[in-house]
Length: 200
Image (cartoon, rainbow, N blue to C red; front, top):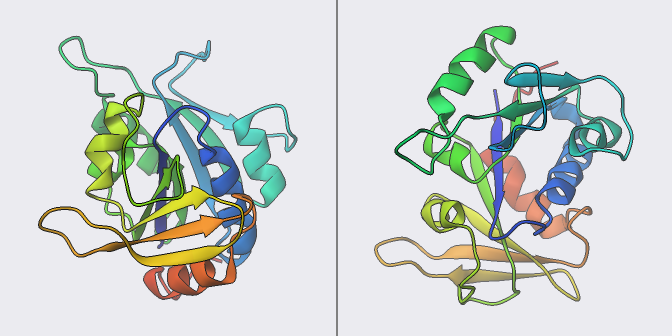
């Protein structure tokens, strides 16, 4: 079983594009892709499965990229907290899948609730700093759990010790010319971190 979590600093940072790039680049894992949102989306139930690939929604894009299944999960926000109630949502999600299912989640908060093999956070600028006042609070909380940062840049390259947080080992920042095309260095870094026996 392999789990990847993908988050981002702001709305529109490119999380879905990166998820689709990972699904396509690691196609042998036959990912179950889950977008977690706190928006209602008019869903009749908290977990909705996408059935048609296409470009009209994020979940349809997952299927077009090669995901075996794709879900939109709407997590309720608690009355006394800005954080989504992910434990309750995950309790409803897990029973639908067998052992060995490989998941890729699009969510900032999910890294606090599942033991991801890899947690990637999209950095809005291709540098070491985290200067953006408009960045999501959920991103700030998740950066410490990230294994690496990803940033859209003019060309593919790697800053091996790009992000240094107090009390932690330096984290690499992978620059991608296209978030939907996983660079060879990022792919080479990812593979050893994932379960070597993907679900078939």
